Length: 379
Image (cartoon, rainbow, N blue to C red; front, side, top):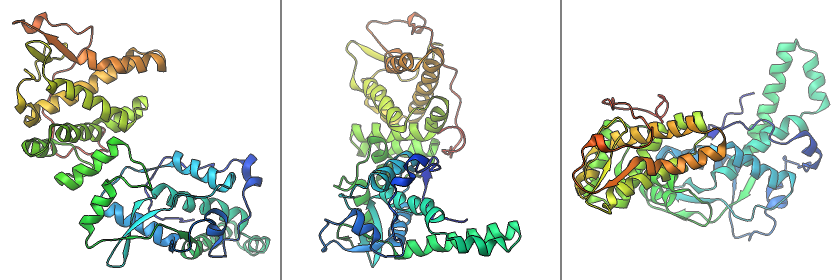
């Protein structure tokens, strides 16, 4: 079965509904176009327009073509399927759309759209393939029968995409796609977005950065723009590059979430650039490598190489904290102490050899190649 809507879902949607809950799933008549509205949006005003599920899927794809958002999370999709189709709850918060020259763009509701799509994928083979369909396929060879049933189920799924209607907020009328980008980034009443994803989107719209690269050219772009941005915006952009470069690797190794890593980097960077409590504030790897120098130097945010070094040092210290931990509680504590280990506040003219940070070791920093992507083992 093809079932390909090209929605970017992270994680598996297998076992969408458990066997124990199958009997709780309403036997919808998906051949009726308003089956979803009548069951899950019965109290929304009729002034809210209805669009097909196919149009909603295409609106998500158009938005993704403008700006690459974080992947749709399978876990959240499963939660929505459970609340809607197992517990029978209403979808009280409609999907938000923008319209440009007759084309719809999703600005809030990717997970809700995916939940409807994944539910149809799940339920159609179970409820809408009839005994006569199986009988017809039984007359064919095993391989041909499987192909025939697969094609039948896929056809029913495609038909459901074209006929299923969903009520949405009246689309916002915009003049050009650039205005859509601003709507995707802006807060709205239809969806929530964590700081890491907001920053991921803003670096694309504000700085024109690639959504999946964190090489020297990207660091240079942020450094060049630093004088035109606020300190908070600059730190936010560097935090995004850190997540792109190291996030996937840390997620595979220890389950670290992008928003956690984004916040950790911002905390370190804010401390580095805030200004010392005493005469100077140094960021030093325990092998004695001097990285950043005085926090009083405002140009630090415009020194892309120093920020790259800082990113690598944070990454390796997080790994070290994880290696030291014996359980999740210890690791959580260790991760919270990474900032302390990374920062050295002192007064007077001390030599680097006099500075000791527990037993942390940071390997010498090497020059990074341009164009590091999220898939090359570095985000």
